[in-house]
Amino acid sequence: MKVFFMIIFTSQLFTSQGQDCQSGEEVLNALKQVQKLLSAHETSFLQSLRSLRKKLSLLQNSTVKHNKSTPDKSSVSDCPPPEPLANGRILGTVFKFGHEVHFLCSSGFQLMGPETRVCLDSQNWSGAQPSCKFVDTTVNNDASASISASSSSRSHPPASVSTHVRASRCIEFLDSTHCTCDQGYSISSHNSTLCTDIDECDLFRRTRPGRLCLHTCVNTAGSFHCECPAGYSLGRDSRSCYDIDECARATHDCSSEQVCVNTFGGHRCVDVDCPRIRNATYIKTSPLRCDRNPCIQGDNACFQAPVFINFHFMSVVSNMSTPTVLFRLSAARILGDTLRFSLLGTQGVQHFSVQRSGRLTGQLVLENSLQGPTTVEVDIEMSEMERRVLLGRYVTKLTLFVSPYNF
Ligand SMILES: *[C@@H]1O[C@H](CO)[C@@H](O)[C@H](O)[C@H]1NC(C)=O
Ligand SMILES: *[C@@H]1O[C@H](CO)[C@@H](O)[C@H](O)[C@H]1NC(C)=O
Ligand SMILES: *[C@@H]1O[C@H](CO)[C@@H](O)[C@H](O)[C@H]1NC(C)=O
Ligand SMILES: *[C@@H]1O[C@H](CO)[C@@H](O)[C@H](O)[C@H]1NC(C)=O
Ligand SMILES: *[C@@H]1O[C@H](CO)[C@@H](O)[C@H](O)[C@H]1NC(C)=O
Ligand SMILES: *[C@@H]1O[C@H](CO)[C@@H](O)[C@H](O)[C@H]1NC(C)=O
Image (tube, rainbow, N blue to C red):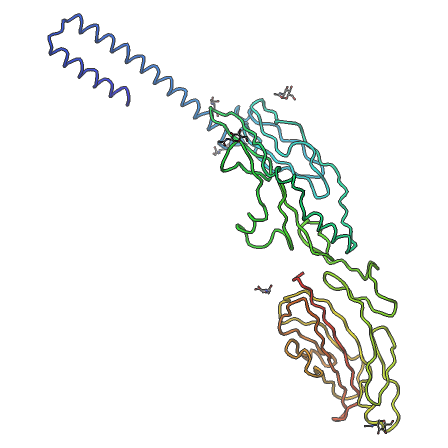
């Protein structure tokens, strides 16, 4: 287009000069010069066109996903598949010039070497092959230890702030510069020679449903990690939190008289005391059960008192979905003709209901979700009747420890 316009322009100039009575020789000379100029322009134009075509083709060769079924010559420009990474994995499946692969180590391993390698036009990967080194990060399951561990990791040393920005790696490609960052970093919006840390916690929160971490997400330079509240340990997936069972681990401080009850995030030491009921006396027959002593003949108050009292401690998470069957009660055998299940007193009636679930079984149902942390108590009574006459009452005293979290 440029050439075409130039012809029109110069010939107009020439004709206007011709009208001013120029000699034939002068005209010829001018024409020759114009032709020279034109051919120079044309050559340069064609050259740049050729170079542009070549660049386009190169660009296409490097970006177009080659047809793998045809082992054509262009596949020669591929890098060999990177060596597998022991105890880690490789992200990236295109092994072509200009493409990158990223290396990730399994949890408990630390990457030694570059996080990223680029396929060079020498058909080699940039840098050296990294490896994953085992690091001893065994979670200390002692509750007190995990508190100190989490509090220390929360206070990041001020030096780590500067590592949130680092230099980018740039390669010259077709007169343009292509800069890349290590994994966990992205090109700074202010300065393409710099990489800034990606806040994975924030990114995930803004772009995806669900949670990256079950509890707390902590952004670090180039990465992130999850933290759990005290009393929980981080799962193998590095995201979940699992309750530490202090009672099973015997890291509790309950006395031998007490019962250790593991809760979500902690434990309780409970004292099981037999109740004082008028005219009846109880004896502890197991750590969680009190049986009534035999009644004196004719002492109706004693016969009306529960035959036994079972203590039941349960730990649940906060905001459980409802309705949920918490547990079932059943009579091993029955002397009478009827078994009745009911809630005793008014405690807990707004949260629970008791339903019959079989001839000899009843179940306690949580009707309204409980928000923790809280402790809820409810007494469930099972009474055995024979022709409407009470044969015996059996009471289960339930204590529900509700966790502060929904895990
Ligand atoms: C691009 O690839 C084609 C074959 O796929 C090849 O003929 C051509 O020479 C390549 N172009 C360049 C500039 O390498
Ligand atoms: C890939 O190659 C196969 C035959 O080798 C051909 O049928 C197919 O059309 C090719 N696909 C592309 C995208 O070139
Ligand atoms: C590419 O790899 C080959 C074989 O491993 C090696 O001889 C060559 O020096 C490498 N080239 C570069 C630029 O690293
Ligand atoms: C980008 O950062 C580099 C390194 O810190 C600095 O030398 C350069 O001046 C910066 N460029 C701009 C445009 O800020
Ligand atoms: C309770 O026991 C006392 C003495 O043992 C007895 O006199 C009284 O009648 C009993 N009460 C009932 C309601 O049976
Ligand atoms: C409780 O769970 C429901 C969904 O089951 C959810 O919509 C609600 O936000 C939760 N409430 C709290 C306080 O977590």
